[in-house]
Length: 326
Image (tube, rainbow, N blue to C red; front, side):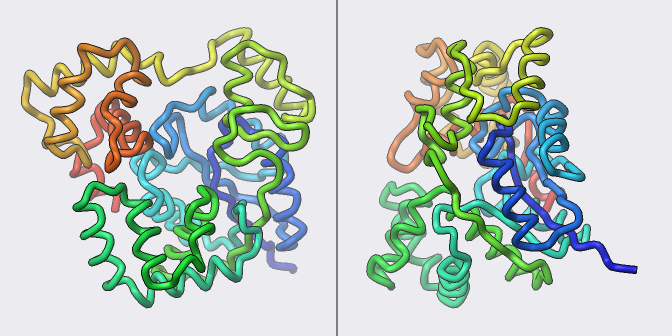
């Protein structure tokens, strides 16, 4: 009997769009996979934001467009920085015994990404020291790492480290290397809009641009989503409203005031005192979560970092939760 070939894909599908369908199709052909296992974030995502529709609806989108199994990535990993996001995802795929992993990237070529992973691994001690020195000057971690790598290599890897899908892909490869995984990695070049583009494209649109279109009540072009996803979203909006980050404004304010009153901020995961003080100080002056994040954001505190911290506060994710999860 032929042994089934399994392919792992790590995703958020917020929402599932034509680019995701393209990725699954290309990945099947690339690996000859018989089954596609998707490790998918639940209701909160890697940037700390809520998904536009619930996890069951997004899983249905995936299963209707080439996935055979969808497994939820626990929120402690799903709503974390790239290394923790990768750690949780790869741990599940390793446990399942997946044969292949495929991810989208701006590079579209696995070789330079693998080369960079070996460089990062071989120079870990030197880079860690340099990154700590740079973050101490107020740089965010991503910028500090990029600067530290450039100091050793010139601009050889500069463009790779500036692209969000490349960065996540590097973390997947790092985790495969750390765990001695037998999973074979592949990458498919991202086409159409960039990850953060907010305008719809004539070809493949980003999830960000599609979410903007949905929130503004505009008609989504048929090319942006598979037909069955259009139908799923249409059915969804007849019963529910699409979720926005700012829907959580009052709840977040209440949680921050509770922390202030109970002086319990130290229990929340990854919440240093200086960030807590900023959040408490700005909460009463801001009318929405978005305004609060923008008010607190600085050179060393990125939008995504603060947004993830906001989710830790909302869900009361503690340092012990992180320790137990690892």
